[in-house]
Image (tube, rainbow, N blue to C red; front, side, top):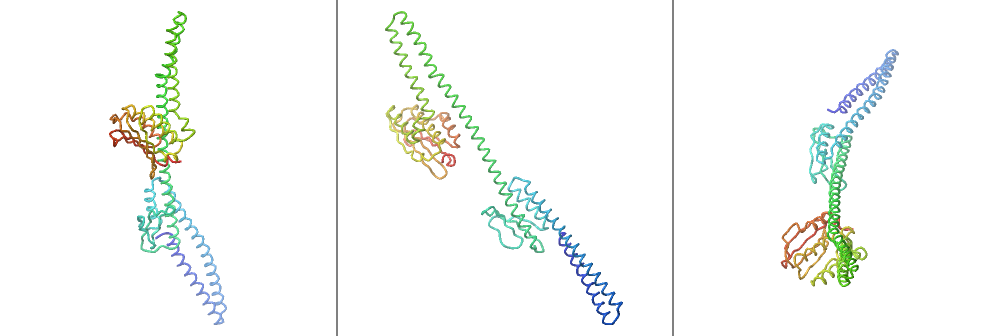
Amino acid sequence: MPSRLRFAKRSSTRASLLVAVVALAAVVSLLGLSLSSSGLAFAGLAAAIIGAAGFALHLIVTERRRHEVVEDELESLMQSLGSITGTLDPGEVLERTLREAKKLFGAKASLLAPGQTSREDGVFPLRIRDEDIGAVKLARSRPFDREEQARAQLLADFASRAVENARLLAEAQVREAERARLSDQLITAEQDERRRMALFLHDGPVQSLSGISLMLDAVIDSLRANRRDEADRVLRSALKRHRDTIRELRDLSFNIEPVVLRDQGFGPAVQALADQVGIANGIQVDLDVEAADSLAENARVGLYQIIREAVNQALRRGPPNRISIRVAAGEGRVETVIADDGTGERRRASYDEIEERARTLSGSVEVEAGADGGTAVRVVLPSYVAQR
């Protein structure tokens, strides 16, 4: 039996005894007065006064003891609440809640599944905002009084908040891990991009400029030797190579971030790319990219680079007759498909760069055989990353 119940029972017994003593003393005093016995009346009065004083003292001691018992119960409840918050796992929070409820109320504790809650005595619902996560059911032989029900519901409410906090913490840890993973991928992608750019500059424009320098030295030597025809031929060749190098650098600048993408948006940038590819290679490029207008800036830039790389790969495999580029926004995702009718690609490594760019946007890449015998590259980005 809980200490509060034992104390209440003993207090009630003592109070009844004192009341009986005071009543008996009053009867004796009245009997003395009726018999004209002053001694008996005085003794009864004195006993009544002493009994009343004892009853008053009993009330004072009882009230003080009752406060001590309540304080002990509150301290036990606070210890139970502290024990519940000592874990970060939602399942363990509920297990500890059942153990603490059994210890606090001396009852058999069980957990009801969501939707099984009822208004019967001993059932205390667990709710997180508007979500029903179950209920704590306490069963024992005697009913729960109002104070015990209040404490049990407080325990259940606190457990619900602890479960919510554990869930939020777990979600925050997942998001932090995902953020760290994406950050690592972004750093890796940036490093790879710088490495590819450095390799391109070294093997392309730098080598061309070095060749132009040697050709200009040859022009000077030819002029000194009065070989003007030779100097003119070498100078014209150097001029052509110089123009080619300027075009390569211009293309590099355009590929890093096209001016039209920055100034006019995704649609015009892809249209400019399609026009350039179509005119240079004599192929038809079909576009349906209006859904990309609502994408975030980093998603637009990344998706444009993916489209450009997929188109370039289609051209390298063998000039196709047609390339289609389609961007569609569905439920929870943004899907981009770049399909061609050229030679199919069997080397998976050819798509490593596209997959790397997609990973930086938390996306995925699928490579399929095209309907016309070519290749279809499907890139799926989650809407929470792609949308504004």
